[in-house]
Image 1: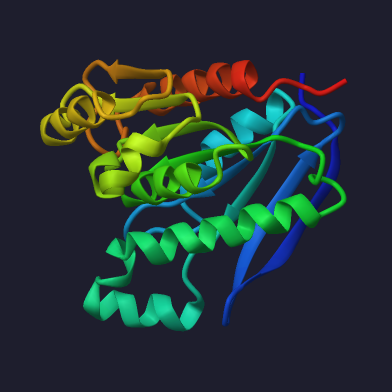
Image 2 (image 1 turned 90 degrees about the vertical axis):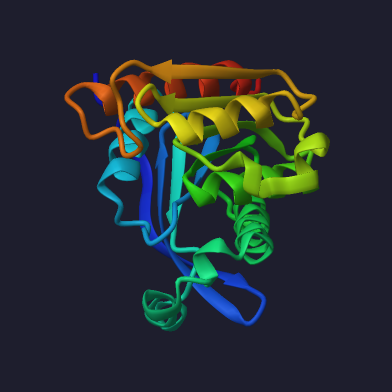
Length: 222
C-alpha cells in the first residue's frame, strides 16, 4: 500500500556560503528521515537514489535528496573532478543538511539516517562520526568507506555496507573498512551485481536491505 504524503517540496538548505537544493518527502507518521549522499558525478536526480528513496517512503521513512554541490560547483567539477572527492567538504555539507532537518518542523523530531553511494558513503561516515548522538544508522551502496579515513574508528551508528558481487575492488575496500568500524556493521553482497547495480533485480535487493536496516535502527518515537 502506498503511503500518503504529509509533505513533499523542493527545499533550499544553507551550508556556509553555499545554498544547496534538495527534495524533501515526508510520509504521514514518518518513523525517521534518511538523508542521501550521492556519489561522484551524480546529483539528487540520480535514478538509482530516487528508486531507493521511493522504497523508503513506501515504508514510512522521510527522505531528503540533496545536491551536495551548488550548480556553479558542479559545472567546475565537470572539468576538474576534484570536488566530488573532497570528502571533508561533502561531510560538512551533510552536517549542514542534518542541522537543517533538525530545525524543519516536519522532520525535527525524527532520527536521521544516511544513505551514501560511492564517494558519498565516505562523506556520510565522516559526518556520522561527527554527530554520533544524531545519526541513527548508515547504509552504503557500492560505497567508498575507505575515503572516511581515520573517522571510521569514530563511527557509532549501525552501518550496512552493500556491495555488488562483481565489484571486486570495492568489495575488498569494504571488507577492510568493516574491520575498522566499531559500531555494529554488516556487509551484504548482492550476487552478480556490478558497481552501479544495473542488473535486473539488483537495485530492488538494495532497496529491501535499506528498508530493513533503517526500520530497525530508526524506530518510531512514542
